[in-house]
Image 1 (cartoon, rainbow, N blue to C red):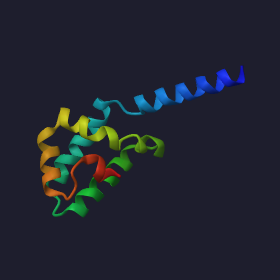
Image 2 (spheres, rainbow, N blue to C red):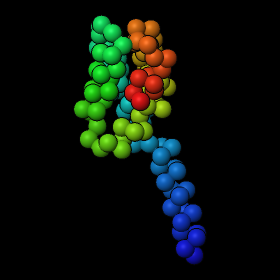
Image 3 (cartoon, one colour):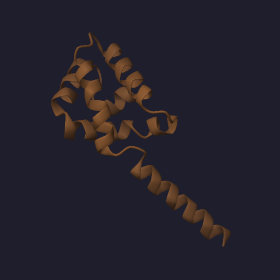
Length: 101
């Protein structure tokens, strides 16, 4: 019985992590304005700081922030692809995930 409970807990945790705290729409609603602003930043370091600190200020729970990087590229590509492309072009990073890590 204890083994079954442990397995159920593990499956539940995996499902919650795969769903994550933020939906793609919620993430893109927060990320796209930051990307638009980041297009005016003079360099890669400023872009990274703007995005990291900007997202950190929008989420109260640090656990929520940990789930964002893997979802950032897909959310931005769907909602604001031009801003995403320009930020990646102006930065030294190949993806938003790598900027946010």
